[in-house]
Image (cartoon, rainbow, N blue to C red; front, side):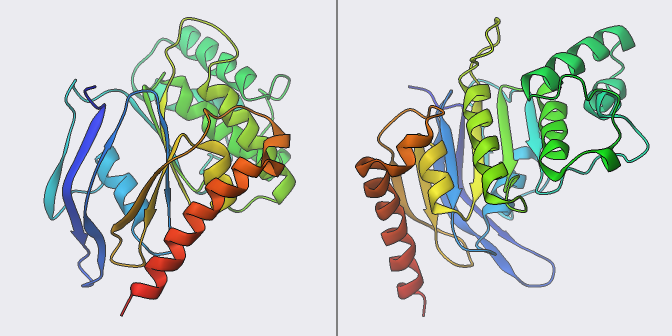
Length: 255
C-alpha cells in the first residue's frame, strides 16, 4: 500500500546547536492513528512541525506519494483569539482563505457541534473551561476538512477526567461516527503518555531521548474505539507494557 507520507532520514539541529531530531525514517499509512511517544525534549514536536512544513529539516525529506493533502494542526495550547467568539475562532482560518462568510459560518458551526459545543457558539474564550477551549481549537482545525490531522500533546495540560473524555471524543471524530461523506482522517498524535498512546492509536512509534531516534515501531492490538472499559483489559496492559519497555530500554542505552 502506498503511504500517505514518508519521512526519509529526517534530522534537525537548531541554531542554538541543539540536535533535536534524527535521523528518523517512517511511513504513515492513510487512515491510521499514529502516536509518537517519548520523553519531553526528544524531538516529537519537531517531527510534527517538519511534517506540517513549519520547519525545514537539515537533512532528509518528507515525501507525499499521492500529493500533499490538506493538513490541520492542533497545538499544545488552544491559541484562541480572546476578542472572538467560539464560532469566530473556529472559522478564522476559513476567513483568511477568503471563503464566503455564510459558508464559513456553517462549516465552523458544524464542527463545533461535532466536538460537543452546541450552544456555545457565541461564548468567548474567557467564558470557556480549558477542555472547551481545546474543543474550539480542534473544531478550528477540522473546519478546513483536513485529510491529515497533526496534534501536538493537545490534552497534556488538562485534568485526567477531561483528558479521557477528549480522548474518547477524538476517537469518535477519527472514526467519523457523526456520519456524513467525509473520509476518515489520518492522525499523527504526539504524547508522552503511554496510556494515552495505547488507548488512542493503531500504532505507536517510540522515540529515544534527544536527539530523538526511533527505538520501536509497535502495532497495537485494536482499532481505537471509545470504550472506557478497554483501559482495564489485559490487552491494554500488554500493549502499554510494550511501549514502556521500549522507553525504558531507550533511556538505559543513552550514554
